[in-house]
Length: 135
Image (cartoon, rainbow, N blue to C red; front, side, top):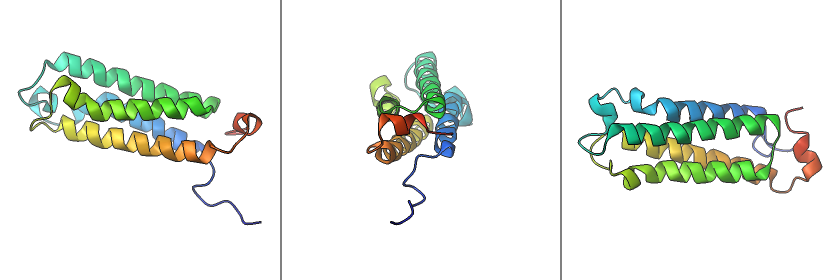
Protein backbone atom coordinates (compact mmCIF):
# COMPACT_ATOMS: atom_id res chain seq x y z
CA UNK A 1 0.00 0.00 0.00
CA UNK A 2 1.38 3.42 -0.88
CA UNK A 3 1.83 6.30 1.52
CA UNK A 4 -0.65 9.16 1.27
CA UNK A 5 0.64 12.15 -0.68
CA UNK A 6 1.25 15.62 0.68
CA UNK A 7 -2.20 16.91 -0.29
CA UNK A 8 -4.15 13.70 0.40
CA UNK A 9 -4.66 14.37 4.12
CA UNK A 10 -6.37 17.37 5.70
CA UNK A 11 -3.68 18.98 7.83
CA UNK A 12 -4.06 21.66 10.49
CA UNK A 13 -1.90 24.17 8.56
CA UNK A 14 -4.72 24.34 6.00
CA UNK A 15 -7.05 25.54 8.74
CA UNK A 16 -4.46 28.15 9.77
CA UNK A 17 -4.30 29.36 6.16
CA UNK A 18 -8.10 29.61 6.17
CA UNK A 19 -7.96 31.76 9.30
CA UNK A 20 -5.29 33.97 7.71
CA UNK A 21 -7.44 34.37 4.58
CA UNK A 22 -10.37 35.43 6.78
CA UNK A 23 -8.20 38.07 8.44
CA UNK A 24 -6.97 39.30 5.05
CA UNK A 25 -10.56 39.65 3.87
CA UNK A 26 -11.43 41.72 6.96
CA UNK A 27 -8.40 43.98 6.41
CA UNK A 28 -8.66 44.17 2.60
CA UNK A 29 -10.38 47.59 2.39
CA UNK A 30 -7.46 49.15 4.25
CA UNK A 31 -4.76 47.15 2.42
CA UNK A 32 -5.52 48.67 -0.98
CA UNK A 33 -3.52 51.79 -0.19
CA UNK A 34 -5.97 53.90 -2.16
CA UNK A 35 -8.30 56.68 -1.08
CA UNK A 36 -11.92 55.63 -0.60
CA UNK A 37 -10.66 52.10 0.22
CA UNK A 38 -9.96 51.32 -3.43
CA UNK A 39 -13.61 51.59 -4.39
CA UNK A 40 -13.22 54.26 -7.06
CA UNK A 41 -16.36 56.35 -7.52
CA UNK A 42 -18.76 53.49 -6.83
CA UNK A 43 -20.94 52.66 -3.84
CA UNK A 44 -21.07 53.88 -0.28
CA UNK A 45 -17.88 52.54 1.39
CA UNK A 46 -19.54 51.57 4.66
CA UNK A 47 -21.77 48.94 3.00
CA UNK A 48 -18.81 47.41 1.22
CA UNK A 49 -16.72 47.43 4.41
CA UNK A 50 -19.57 45.92 6.44
CA UNK A 51 -20.15 43.12 3.91
CA UNK A 52 -16.40 42.49 3.63
CA UNK A 53 -15.96 42.31 7.39
CA UNK A 54 -18.93 39.97 7.75
CA UNK A 55 -17.59 37.55 5.12
CA UNK A 56 -14.06 37.71 6.56
CA UNK A 57 -15.22 37.04 10.12
CA UNK A 58 -17.37 34.11 8.96
CA UNK A 59 -14.45 32.61 6.99
CA UNK A 60 -12.19 33.01 10.03
CA UNK A 61 -14.76 31.41 12.36
CA UNK A 62 -15.40 28.48 10.03
CA UNK A 63 -11.67 27.80 9.65
CA UNK A 64 -11.29 27.96 13.42
CA UNK A 65 -14.20 25.54 13.84
CA UNK A 66 -12.50 23.16 11.40
CA UNK A 67 -9.33 23.35 13.46
CA UNK A 68 -11.27 22.31 16.57
CA UNK A 69 -13.86 19.86 15.18
CA UNK A 70 -13.86 18.97 11.49
CA UNK A 71 -17.19 18.65 9.66
CA UNK A 72 -17.89 18.55 5.92
CA UNK A 73 -20.52 21.30 6.02
CA UNK A 74 -17.89 23.81 7.14
CA UNK A 75 -15.99 23.45 3.87
CA UNK A 76 -19.22 23.85 1.91
CA UNK A 77 -19.98 27.07 3.77
CA UNK A 78 -16.46 28.33 3.09
CA UNK A 79 -16.98 27.72 -0.63
CA UNK A 80 -20.23 29.68 -0.57
CA UNK A 81 -18.54 32.56 1.27
CA UNK A 82 -15.64 32.58 -1.20
CA UNK A 83 -18.06 32.69 -4.13
CA UNK A 84 -19.98 35.45 -2.35
CA UNK A 85 -16.77 37.45 -1.99
CA UNK A 86 -16.09 37.04 -5.70
CA UNK A 87 -19.64 38.20 -6.49
CA UNK A 88 -19.58 41.10 -4.00
CA UNK A 89 -18.14 43.69 -6.45
CA UNK A 90 -20.94 42.89 -8.91
CA UNK A 91 -23.65 42.90 -6.25
CA UNK A 92 -22.60 46.18 -4.61
CA UNK A 93 -21.45 47.84 -7.83
CA UNK A 94 -17.72 48.46 -7.45
CA UNK A 95 -16.52 46.59 -10.51
CA UNK A 96 -14.77 49.69 -11.91
CA UNK A 97 -11.18 50.76 -11.57
CA UNK A 98 -10.71 50.24 -7.83
CA UNK A 99 -8.18 47.78 -6.42
CA UNK A 100 -10.62 46.30 -3.91
CA UNK A 101 -12.35 44.39 -6.71
CA UNK A 102 -9.07 42.61 -7.47
CA UNK A 103 -8.44 41.89 -3.79
CA UNK A 104 -11.89 40.39 -3.34
CA UNK A 105 -11.72 38.32 -6.50
CA UNK A 106 -8.28 36.95 -5.58
CA UNK A 107 -9.08 36.25 -1.94
CA UNK A 108 -12.45 34.72 -2.83
CA UNK A 109 -10.77 32.43 -5.37
CA UNK A 110 -8.17 31.36 -2.80
CA UNK A 111 -10.92 30.62 -0.25
CA UNK A 112 -12.87 28.54 -2.78
CA UNK A 113 -9.78 26.58 -3.88
CA UNK A 114 -8.73 25.87 -0.29
CA UNK A 115 -12.26 24.76 0.64
CA UNK A 116 -12.42 22.49 -2.42
CA UNK A 117 -9.08 20.93 -1.50
CA UNK A 118 -10.18 20.28 2.08
CA UNK A 119 -13.53 18.87 0.96
CA UNK A 120 -11.77 16.56 -1.48
CA UNK A 121 -9.43 15.38 1.28
CA UNK A 122 -12.31 14.67 3.67
CA UNK A 123 -14.78 13.22 1.16
CA UNK A 124 -14.18 9.52 1.90
CA UNK A 125 -13.54 9.83 5.64
CA UNK A 126 -15.99 8.43 8.14
CA UNK A 127 -17.41 10.55 10.95
CA UNK A 128 -15.08 8.76 13.37
CA UNK A 129 -12.05 9.70 11.24
CA UNK A 130 -13.23 13.30 11.02
CA UNK A 131 -13.36 13.61 14.79
CA UNK A 132 -9.70 12.59 15.00
CA UNK A 133 -8.58 15.61 12.93
CA UNK A 134 -5.75 17.60 14.46
CA UNK A 135 -4.95 15.07 17.17
